[in-house]
Amino acid sequence: MARETIEIPVTARQTGKHNSRSSRIAGKIPCVIYGPKTEPINVLADEITIRKYSGRRYEATIFGLKSDDKAVSSLQVIMRDIQVHPMTRRPVHVDFYAPDMTKPVRVSVELRLEGKAQGLTEGGTLEHMLREIEIEALPTAIPEYISADVTNLGLGEALHVSDLKAGTGYKFMSLPTLTIATVAVPREEEAAAPVAAAAAPAAAAAGGKAAPAAAAAKAPARRAPSPGDSVETRRSRSVVC
Image (cartoon, rainbow, N blue to C red; front, side):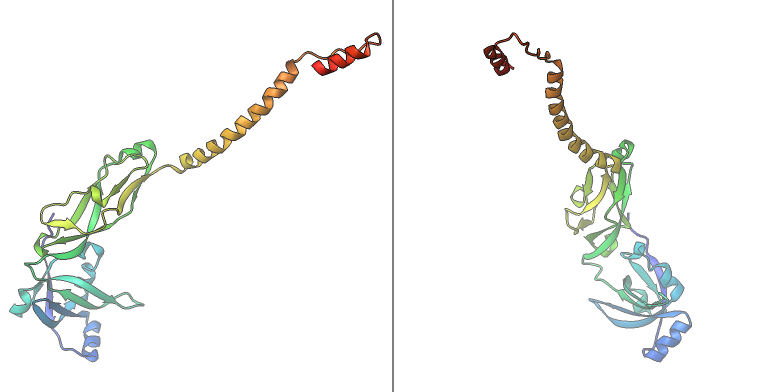
């Protein structure tokens, strides 16, 4: 699903610390536009607008710039770097990267899970491991997000990047072995397995000890020798027993 172009209004700005500080007080953020075919251009953007589109969801979004300067208005950019104040976390500077629209770029796109994993009906827990995936695509073909179907994921199974099928206009650049999601086995079952394994040898040992005891209990009691028995008879019975 391709993204819709979002416009960000910008105005020209004067450089210098004093001018930048005054702009921030007025709610304007100093920005710079640059790219392989674009010389650096200094502009101002509204802080509220920058904060609105500074989330992870918009990392790979292609923005259009709205300006009185026709050269700036014709540019399409990616919000590549946002510097924030260490205390207030307010944006203080933004880099707008103007890519060559005829060449592919590498960007990270949101990865969403779809479907209900089969392992959930068996008591498993679905764990979403990879939230973003790196792709390579033309700027105009960057999807809004990538979907990963987990419907056939069973208990103890995992979905990897290699299991995904790339759409039209882009290819995956993340490692194929990266785990996207997994259905974890319930902890009770994990704990029961080693306990059962440890109990088996103990039960076998207990059974081995019980067998001689049972045999001894079933054996007939010895007759005490009488005074009339000979010494040889007593010795013979002693050997047999």
